[in-house]
Length: 165
Image 1: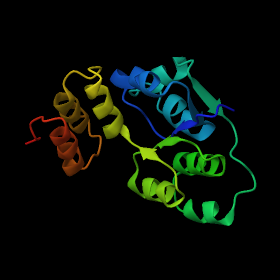
Image 2: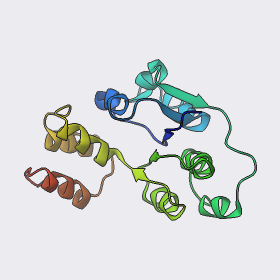
Image 3: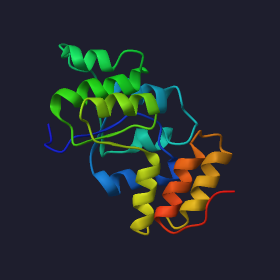
Image 4: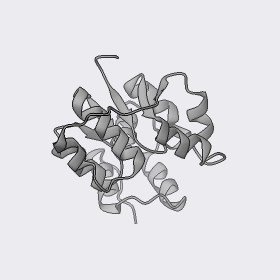
């Protein structure tokens, strides 16, 4: 296992899939996430990219014996988020990529460092890999991806960009 462990819990935006590799190198996902995104989500953005990505490692199982604190934090989370947190916490992963707010809170309560899509896209904009972050946010919202507009506006403000309408 690499000393730098990064775990992804959800679908990623097809147009910026390579941004994950550029930013983080190898990423670990779990069978539950792979099945949800690449198999059940076949034809949706990110499914084909995930199937082809050689830099994504698919793990089949989460650790069997979880500390009670970790198991408790994961109660009620979706399978993908739960598998990421259950695997990352005992290994002290250096980063987990999670968008779902409840799962983010659970990961943080266990001392895990958390980033989400907005932070990754913002980082890509800082590196000039995402050329129009505001347009990306508008496109994602128009595609029905649920983001808190306040968080999107905070991200845009950090880069000196115009707020969303």
